[in-house]
Structure formats: structure tokens, C-alpha cells
Image 1 (cartoon, one colour):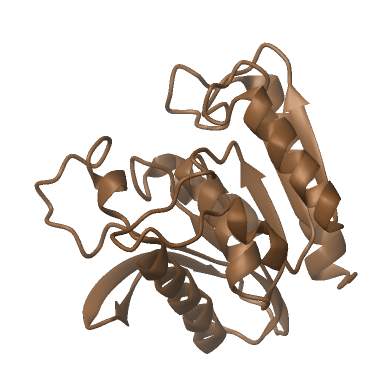
Image 2 (tube, one colour):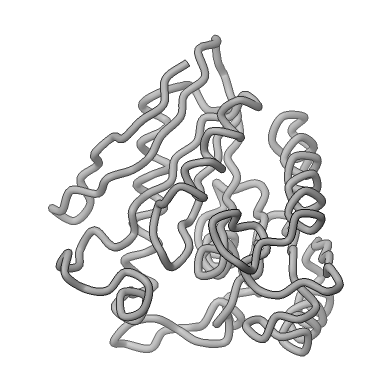
Amino acid sequence: MTIGWDTIEVDGNPMRTYVGVPDRPGPLPGIVIAQHAPGVDESVQDAVHRLHREGYVVAAPQLYHRQPREVDPKIARTSLLKDTEVIRDMNAALAHIKTRAQISRAGVTGFCMGGRVAFLMAAANPEFKASVVFYGGNTMKSWGENQGPTPFERLKDVSCPVLGLFGADDQNPSPEDVKKIDAELTRLGKWHEFHTYQNTGHAFYNFAADRYRDRAAKAGWGELLAFFDVYLKQGKS
């Protein structure tokens, strides 16, 4: 088994990417993980390790790579991201794991802002055959100078099944936001399944944060594994 940091060039910039490649013959299913606001930290790296052990080729790109290091990674950096660049970064991470192993089918997941990116990529790249969204906030907002379509407005282009995992006490996305996204995906005829955990707020999967909720984290991870098993390992369309 191989796991560690690779460097990918995107738009002339080096993008550090945490990658796990199982030591077994391919083709193998692949997953790209979109980071949360703190970056590709121990929580995101742990998700790479866990999926790697399940037999997935995994990549978690550092989406802040275009920004100066002195920018506060927990506050200001998210406001500097642009959807067009994030899409290129996620696509580059997918292309990279294809150079590391033969990939059968690819999926995408992410936490917090990364959950938003998981919605975004389900619409932006049909190569992703399954998307798992952990409490993706700000889906009704676009990132970038040109104010392109929001992830919510892009839902019409979603081309894969979507699993959404949310907290009932979260305010971004709020339960009202989740209902709105659910209704829009239903109206558009897009296959999706949403789970909302009671007595649970935002960032419930992040074991390094006070908001971690053990039951919701374990239940949500179990749903993710079952979902990816069907749509990536078994290849269900």
C-alpha cells in the first residue's frame, strides 16, 4: 500500500494532494475528496486512509494552493476560492489518480465547503459516477469574480446519484436549505437520498472538532461505504 503527498501541476501552480493507492491489481474504484475549510488536515487525511483501506484509490487536493500561505486557512481562504478553479483542481486530482492506477469508476465526496464541491462536481464532470455530500453549505452562492451559476443552479446538470448527510441543528445548510435542495433534485428527476441526523449540527464528522457527533459520524460513514460499494465497486448505473 502507498499513501502520502504527491504534487500535481494545475494552471502552472503546484498543488499538493494527499493520495492513497492500494497495493493490488486494477482496475480499482477511485474517489476524490474535497477538503473542509481548515484544509487537508488530519480529519481529511484520515478519510483518505479509511477509504484506501477499503480498496479505493483516493486523492484529497489542497484547494488553497493558489493563495499566499499567510492567509488564515480557517476564515479568509474560503472567500478567495473560485468555482472555475476548484473544478479544474478536482479534475486534475481525478486525472492524477488515473496515472497512479487503472481506475474503473470514480466518485467524489467532501465535508463542509467540500460537500458544496461534491454537489458542484456531480454537475460539472460526468466522469464522477457517485457523489456523497457531508453537510455542504453555501450551495446557493457562487464562488469567484464572474459570479457564475451556483451549485444549486447547476443541479440540472447532475449526472450521478447523490447521497446527502446533514445535521438537523445545522444552519449552513439549514434544514430549510436541505428541503429546498431535495425538492429541486426531485423536480429535476435526479436520483438522490438524504439523511438528516437529530441532535446534530455542522461538522459532525470532524473528530478534531467539538461539534463531532459519534453516532452521526459512524452512521454517515456507513452510508457512504454502502453507497460507494453499489455505484463504484459494483458499478450500478
